[in-house]
Every structure is written in C-alpha cells, then in structure tokens.
Length: 119
Image 1: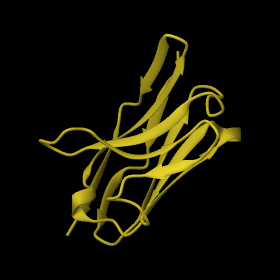
Image 2 (image 1 turned 120 degrees about the horizontal axis):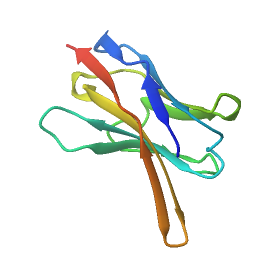
Image 3 (image 1 turned 60 degrees about the vertical axis):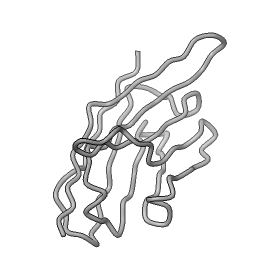
Image 4 (image 1 turned 30 degrees about the vertical axis):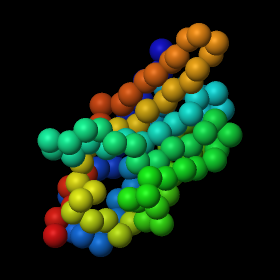
C-alpha cells in the first residue's frame, strides 16, 4: 500500500508562484509513474503533468512553460513548481502514483491540496 500526502497549496495572486509537494510512503519513483491532476469546482479532474518511472516529464498544454514537475528520490517526494499562476489554475491538486504489472494495476491518490489564484 502506498500513501501519498500533498502539501504546499494556498492563496496566491495572479502571476505568483507556489511549489506543491507529494510525499510518498516509500521508494516508489523507480517503479511507479507519477502524475499531478487538478479539479476545479464544477469541472472534471484533469491531468496536469506527469513523470515516468524513468524520470521523463510531460505536461498539459495549459501549463507547459509555467509548471515544472520533479522528484527527489532521497526524500521520496515529488514536486510541482508552479510559476506565472493564473486564476484558471485555481483547483484542488492531487498527486497520483500508478503502475501496471501484468494484469494488475496499482493506482494511488493523495487527499489533495487547494490552490487558489486571485486576479
């Protein structure tokens, strides 16, 4: 069982920055793919950024050039550095760890952290 705990959310003005953290309960980065998702009020959860088990980052077009995903294996922590924040980035941000092993899918989620960007 993997536990994920997000932190770092808060209230920031448009144009500002925040860094979200996702602390994992064990050394999972080498075997799990890691993703950040967000869900705004009244909207479906959407994928924001991801990192393969090999450490390769990918981004949604809406955040490309503004957000950076990274991981610290020694701390079992994934980060999402968010710069040039916009009001439309307001959402609850979740981290996700998943892997497919044969016919089995392991999929874990954190509890989420609120990000609010004021105009």
